[in-house]
Amino acid sequence: MTTDANQNTNKEVAEWVRFGMRLAVSAALHPLEYSKVLIQLGYEPTAPVPGKSMFGTPIMVLPNIFQYTANIRKTDGFYGCYRGLTPKLVGCVFSMVLSEKIADRLGLAPMEDKKDDEPLSSEALYLQFKVNLKRDVVLSVSGIVVSHPFHVITIRMMAQFIGRETFYHSILGSIVEIYKNEGIMGFFAGLMPKLVCDVACVVLTSTTVYLLNKYVIKDKIARQYSAGVTQFAFSSILYPFVVVTTCMTVQGSRLVAGQPPFMPAYKNWMDCFGDLSARGELKRGASMFCRPAAGLGKPMARNTLYVPLPALAKYN
Image (cartoon, rainbow, N blue to C red; front, side, top):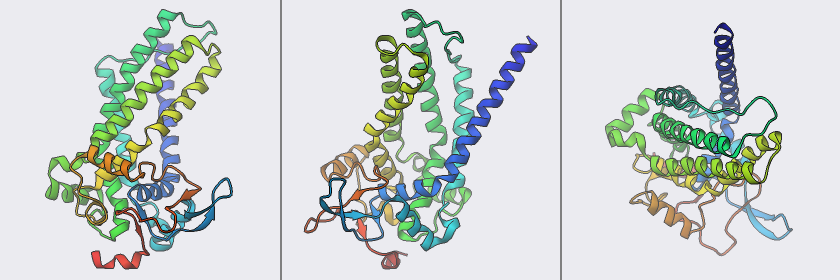
């Protein structure tokens, strides 16, 4: 019993260490995520310039993610690049702790692979898939719902860069701002497309990995890599839902980024999805390096601003 208790303790400590490392990496990369959110919202502080595609074709290109981040730093300084970091980290901790407790309360313990090299039987493999999928869906849904209010605060803190507002200056102040102007539902703006995206990714990834492990991949090490590759592939396919989530998260707020003329007044997230799809903008922010813009003579997207920041002073 003592040995089992020590093993469980060591396992829990290891999980928290990995979680802490993920938080550290997330914090370090926050400026890039900040830039990506603004791009997803359709904001471009500088005009496109002539450039070339991967095949050498002349095109108009926008600043890459690093140049975009440099513009944020130039405008707001080094610490300005970390706007929204605190609520994001708080939301991650809430998601981790509470979702695990909910899964444990429901009796959804994970089924792990055997330590020896003997492959699982078809029945055992299916049972493992079914049990782990149920647990992963519960973890995903509960984690998203619990942390989403902090996600809303994070995105809106970032979106203030566009209109230079100061409505969301702290977690407590942001809570008051949202509740006063939108009520409880304001804390769950953009929740549905985020749930659709994350749950679909979990289900598709788990199902595909199960089928690959059952019929194609037999090597234990190869199976570990296949899970990561499969998850990345489906995350890329479902990326449009991330853009819609970001847009709907600021919709309804007092921010310039969430109101006409910058952003249309969408009826719901499906209306937003349809509008962005019709204009070919569901992949905004998907590329970090080569970011082609509309060619010369083509109209700009109605919610895309190619203007320097000082021109937005009239919105203050």
